Image (cartoon, rainbow, N blue to C red):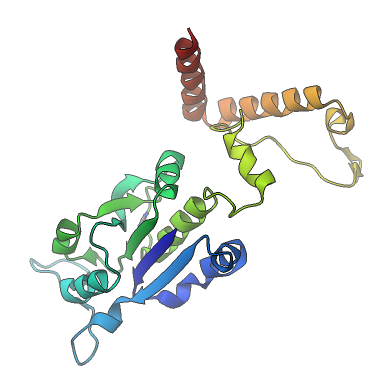
Length: 235
Ligand code: ADE
């Protein structure tokens, strides 16, 4: 997958170009390309923003440098996203969908936003990472890239990826333990060291169901209704 990121702060993206995602880059699975919007400003001071027409607080990204940057990454016909608290909330369903794309373009806004004509002309989908406002779209873009990248085959080791396809998908994760079996008098649940795989599987599922029901009744209901529609299909 190729991801073009348009931003005024390309240096922020070392977080996703190193680590696991950096390895995906080396393997040729994921190519993250950074474009500095300011490089496309025709202004002698490399200005990239200005005051909004009609007044109001903050600055708005200028149409021209963003337009030229979109042309430079050949955004025409590619799925183009604009990170914005006004957008559709990013969830696992959207993440799975985005992970199918060969090409993505992500525009990171700053200040009060971007000239609306950019969003209209390039038919940009607005995506929010939650109902809170950050100072820019860079952190949201990194959240999106990280979550999309881990759904691309071979980005994670196979043992990681398999979990998402399993019966647990849509549920919160069960508690995890590692060595030692006894730590400061706190024991690992007996079943996990029993070697009985059927019981271990049942314990994990039970824990996932319990946590999801308790903490996220919305996800729990969704999980139950998914099960119902599956059994209907089988009939
Ligand atoms: N830019 C500022 N806040 C944001 C949010 N919550 N999601 C996406 N982009 C943003």
